[in-house]
Image (cartoon, rainbow, N blue to C red; front, side):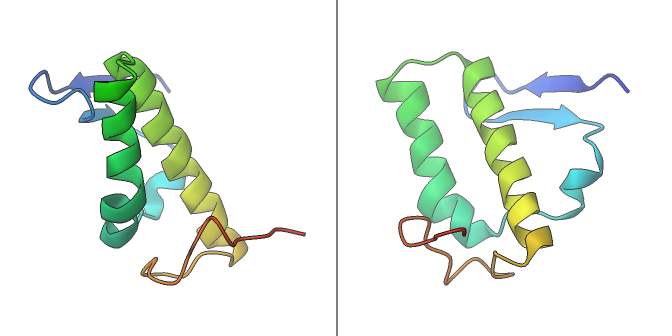
Length: 90
């Protein structure tokens, strides 16, 4: 299945991929997006001056990773207690 990309030119971090695979059945909690993902993507876009497509790829990779964490039982549903700095996977 070929994905279609929708780019919002007013905000380079706001790039969406339509027709995502089943991994998007789970979504990243808003608290995680606000505390971790959005500041990181903003840093990439504004300070590092990465292209909107690179920022999109980082967003998608993070979303896929979050879905894997949730399916593995390593993520807390609302994201409030998940701290990547102290997360150790053995």
